[in-house]
Length: 121
Image (cartoon, rainbow, N blue to C red; front, side):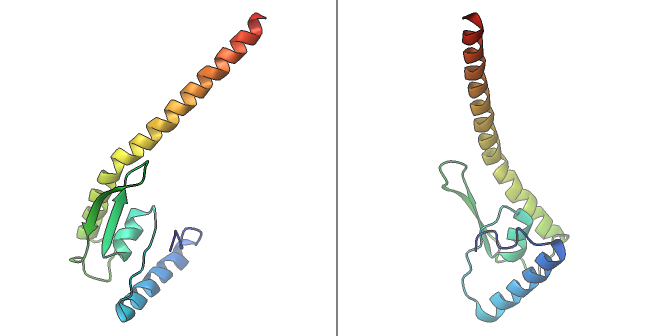
């Protein structure tokens, strides 16, 4: 599932999180769940895989089997796990932001050069 709860309001999302956990406990089927929400990943998953920025490669896997269900984001161990995963992501986010700023700066330089060339004519 790719970001299945992204467009939902908070109450519906929370309700569906509980439903998904119940379905998983009953069936034990594998569910591949893609999300950018670390709290959601930790709350719902038995394993979280963090990818690198570009190209997307596995940077680190976190085994969450030891965290008991149901999980609440306010629980200390859950909050610490979220924080640890977010720290792992910071480098990748910084790389993406740096790349975007570099592209913005270089395209801005090209526009300035083009404007400067026209104004000299």
